[in-house]
Image (tube, rainbow, N blue to C red; front, side, top):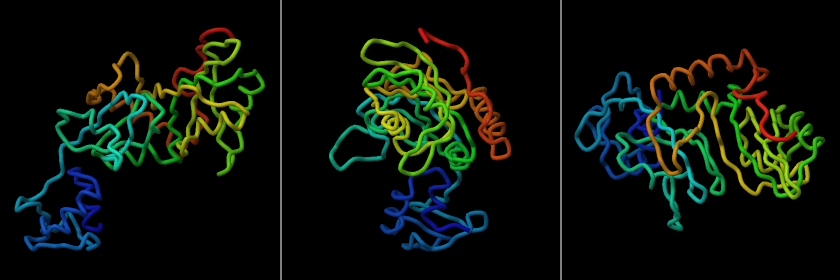
Length: 259
């Protein structure tokens, strides 16, 4: 049993906010009777849900990979008229929603899907799925700072899990590192750098589990290949709650640049 707005969203036809609007506008039926209550409990397996007089069925599953540019919001709309990821999805064959978020100033790999179970598995903190970030710091970073990031740092919402961190480049005034984390707290990477008295000048997500950004062009999207989806599902199974987060993240151990 689910509330009507959630049941519509689970069918992969729109967000819960969109569904609530359709319901209140009298466009949704339950067993051929108009229902204007988004909180009504329904059983999608036994009851017939409809929109604009047409019975609803679950949308074909689809998962996309998008290279989100810096300056683009991970949201459906913005009251200030700023660009969102949905402005980049022209030609997308189905409604999708972001799997997690990237803040406005962060670029890189973003997955979008209409499969709620897959999205919940990826974003569940217990899954321990590694995400890899390329970080350009605002100030020099020491070996001791890198070790603190690896060990876990204390944030205002508690200590972070141990991370993986590797040098990419070291310059006189700043550093570039690759950082793997297995959590998804709000602006976590930026807060981790502040915890070691530094900051982030540029941040890009390079990978989510086995799905790597690679040479994909900024602002472009494409569906995941079946082989990529299978790799992702295998990674989720391997990094599930039973296995914890002790596994080796993809790419760890390949050092780039001066230590």
